[in-house]
Image (tube, rainbow, N blue to C red):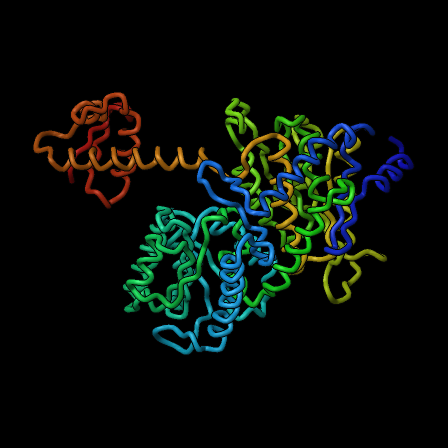
Length: 529
């Protein structure tokens, strides 16, 4: 298309949601003029299904539960009075607890107050909160926030080393819905040990966010932790950022959580609209469907043109890929659906992988995030009539044009600014888009059987490790090869797993396993130290 035709197309398909300071441009997707009409009935059904979900339908069939993250920012929509009260009381308690911490009313074992927040969680218990805290944090925040979001010993040591002498003034927030998530439990045990080494009582520095009656809940009650905030079975981890999971770290950082909830709530209202052309979530879901032919054949590259939104891609990877990556649809048919998400930020990626995006395999579409307001104060001129922010905007426009000129498609979400309200709206926009797109492709967005399969496999590996280590400790003869040890415990078919277990055990001092090298890695012998 020539520039005039593109301008006309831009005006025709620009979705303006002025109530939430957001616009969605789909003009650089190459759908034809009949596409929206052809998808009208499927989108009508998708919007109706979302209405049912918000009214309390059990959308997570595998776990027989409702899905109600929308109620977190509009408690009046909750299907019963008890839930409404729970939501409102929790939000009020989060804000009051943060105020009490800032005022020194909730204080550590030693010292006048807390000034560091250490969040321990994984997946949905960390990614959303990390995104919010990074996007909205300032140099004037009363507390800094750090995360332990993996069971990596070196990563845990690195985070604890950063805290160093600040550990006595560190408030630790442990987040686990079930209380049984191993990565979170491991991080908690490591951090509790660090407090003990410092002569401190972990419970006097600890807060739990978990379901009532969970293992974590029982521990926090038994040990008299500072506070317990609820999670509910109707809130999935990847959609929990507007619950206490995301609100508590944000409130402790002094982020305006009411504004964030307001932005999410107003975006929910906009994206309930039945007029597709005025509903940015419906429009974006249709673009995902168009780009991947309803089968997820293209990846989505997320490019936010603002440093504060760098972690958006990581957050969206879980929200989108865990929700949509499914082997079977709701009828049980094998479909292998999904939408792969990757990305970092602009204009950094113009010096990284935009070269491949423009000239390499055409297996993606780009989701640009453009922010209009640069900063509150006037900027210096780096050239005649040009600021650093002007350069950033120009690089976004140039990349968008260069991709389109080479038949690479894109959508653009434009925000007025990066604020608590706009971040809340952005989160809600993607949550709703995921729900609508899942309806279009007939998969459940709210279960995760693949994740559970991975956890079971990891558990089986750890059980095998216990057997292997027990056998080595019991051996009184010479050390053995992997094949010999696997045969001795009746696990010859699992020799490769036994090999990885032994190599890891021998590389660390924890299990007293000695490795003697052979002519090749598989001739090595293992025995007790």
